[in-house]
Length: 252
Image (cartoon, rainbow, N blue to C red):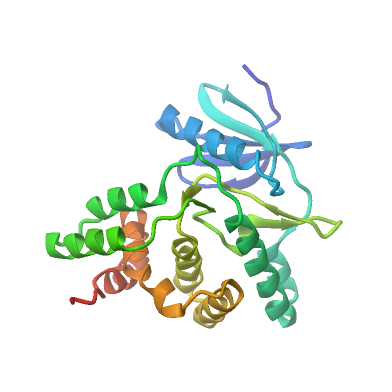
């Protein structure tokens, strides 16, 4: 069993705490955290680590004080979110880089990752939505193209670290899947929107469509599906907004 110094906390959530010990990051899960979820997350990081992308290197899966933990290398730098907060006048420049990094991620695939379409079908089933709406969402999801691009699933400026050498590392691959890049873009769009950054959300989506040469109408087809999937673990204050989007389905 590994021994780490757990004095320096980077982040704390209800069911996980992330520590830094020298050149290592230790993510310690809560007692009730399923071992299968821990191993899936570690496999995600290992799989993405086999692509040319800059990501923290997985070091080990272990137990700390009887709780599961994942250990990876510490990447020094500032998150893109911190840089945007520090230099708001450079927002457009940072957003350009943000979208470029996401498009770089989408260039790769990782065949060991779960399929996004299957995950979305599962989440729609668990969304608590009316059966008629669920049927419509499942049908829409089945009609959209199935790709196997690497999708981060939680791509936001706080998950990008810019090092002193100006290299960009993408962190937190716990939601990674293989699927359609436009679905991944809608996840990001909603993250901006749910954080109250509506102008940034619109700017981001327009830039993503322009740089990826994707029709905005096509990307928007994913909004109801992704909103429904996010209902499963939504905060109470997000539910009304997500329900509104999840129910916006064109009945042909």
